[in-house]
Image (cartoon, rainbow, N blue to C red; front, side, top):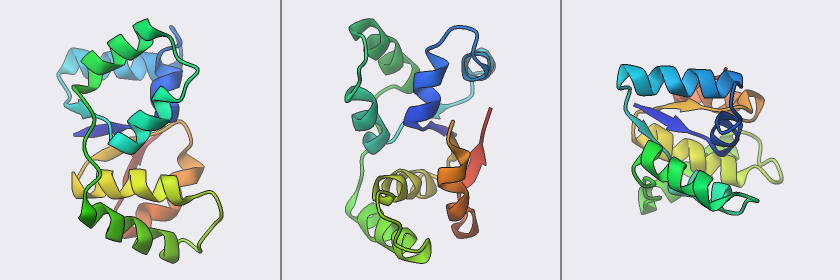
Amino acid sequence: MIHLDTSFLIRALARGSAEDRRLREWLEDGTPLAMGAVSWAEFLCGPVRAEDVDLATHIVNGPVAFLPGDAASAAKLFNLAGRRRGSFVDCMIAAIALRAQATLATGNSTDFRRFEPAGLRIIAP
């Protein structure tokens, strides 16, 4: 299972990008893809075109919910990673992927590398 981060999905919508090529490979291979609700909310903040939202909806089959246990996990990640200002959303995204035992595809690997000691697996284009 691969969870798409907001940055990855936005870049994948640019035809010919590394993320676009990678996403097409996964779709052709039948790799299960999903996206956490937090990443989905970021994506919808846009700017994003309606046709991109429609396409993304078909790719990820709806967002994976952020659950109460994810809140506790995100708080733990936030504290373990040094309580960096502006990083809590990344903690929430990582918590959902960790619960789902998914690898996180991201265009911003430096934002998520600090969660690797907690078990997060990352794919960067």
